[in-house]
Every structure is written in structure tokens, then in C-alpha cells.
Length: 299
Image (spheres, rainbow, N blue to C red):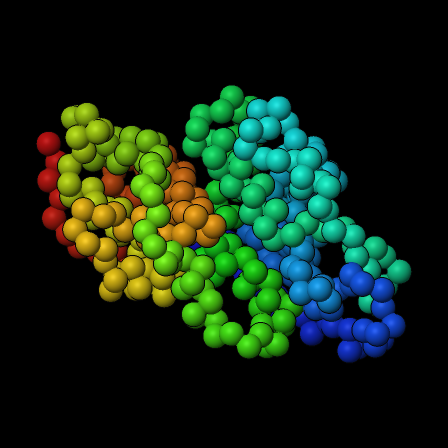
């Protein structure tokens, strides 16, 4: 299966229309589209260098609706403790689009990720979600995993062409986004659903809290090795001291969200499988990886 996220580079910018000096700020100085699993999201980099996503196309990508507001799919009671919808609505960005008479209405890339992360947290913490909300939460987990593979801002920069105006080295920006300067405080990162699926697929009869150590190899193969290759390579070559888990190196703002989202993506795949070998094969095919050979013991 192909990557769920692609960038469509657009050459549209203010130089094709009118001088930026004649426009009222904020206005879209760079524009493009991001393809999320077949749903295109219009994205812009404003003259203020702020990255924004079209509010309407975001609704369609997440909730699969042609019309809908942020309040419709992110303001429900069950999500209140996970998504600060009032703050997001207050900070909605209105901007002009050069060459058109339309006013753009968008949300920042940060708020888009907060909405997705809120849904994932609600699912992870077993909030009383409806079936529809659980469906959206799983979709958010998949989308977030794909988006943070390079960083959403970086993806917008690529789609709009703004990346060519950036002075910073892309790889170093990406690594700084994922790797914390100091080890973050330990917190539970892997959802119980992941261990439950590993147990079911390997016929593990023991308690999940005393899970076999070789499941760590599954985590490396199915989770870490499917992350952004540059980040995975860095993590492998810069292992923490013994006793400190890899995920403690990941930053709160990007890395942990990608890690949790990837876990739920793997959980979703696992639920369609009958054996661990089937899951490993599906993951390898989905991410274009070669399945690693290692011996596993089943009790």
C-alpha cells in the first residue's frame, strides 16, 4: 500500500499576481496541496511565514464530509478534555488569496495536529467515544503517523515550494524535531491494545505485564523501523544508556505523537490478521520494508 501522504508542489505564489506590497496582510504567499489518502488538503504559507491548512478540506480529510465545521467534529462533549476547541476556533486564520476574490479560512498546522492528537489520546485513554468518533480517531492516528514522518510544516513547505526559500538544512531540522536535547521523563507510550494484539497473534498465555522480551524485536521491526528512516537510523546509532528506553529520546511535540499514532496504525492492521507472521508481512508491504528474519518462540 502506498504512503497515505504526498505533497503536490504548486508554483502559485504572489509573484504571478501582484506585488506583495499591494496586499493586505495576512495573505497567501505560497500555496499547494497535500494528498491525505486521496483527500486533498489546500495548504498555504502566509506572508507572515505561518503555515495554515484550509478548514473545509481538513474537515473532509478527517471526517469524510463535504461540509462541516471544526465545531462539528472536534467540539463534542466526549472530546472536551482532549481538544481545546474554543482556543482553536478563536485562533482560526482568515487571509486573502492573491488572484482571487475569496477569503481563505484556515487552521494552523499546530492546531491540526492538536485535533488529531486529541482524538488519538481520547482513543488511547478509552474515552466514551461513539462508533463514529472512534472511526475518526483511528483515521487521525493514521494521518498523524504519515504527516509527522517528515513533519507537517516540512510537508507544507514542500507542497507550496516554500522549502526553496528556507535557509536551514532539511535533515537537521527534521532531526531536531524528533530528538530531544535531554531525555524526557518516562511516561506510558505504548497502548495496551498493542500488547493485546501481540498476545493474540503469538498465542501468548501469560500476563501482558510479564510479556516475553522478544516482543521488543517486534516493536523495533513494526514500530521504530517504519518511522522516518533518518530518524530511525539516528535512534539506532545513538542508543541511550542501558535501562533507558528509546522512546524517551523522542520529543513531546513531534516524536511521541508519531510513535503513539504509529502504534495505533499497527493495532488497526493487527486486528485484520490471524497470526503474527501475517501482520509482519502486511507491515512490510505497507511501508515498503523487507521483513526481518528472527526466531520467535511460542508457548
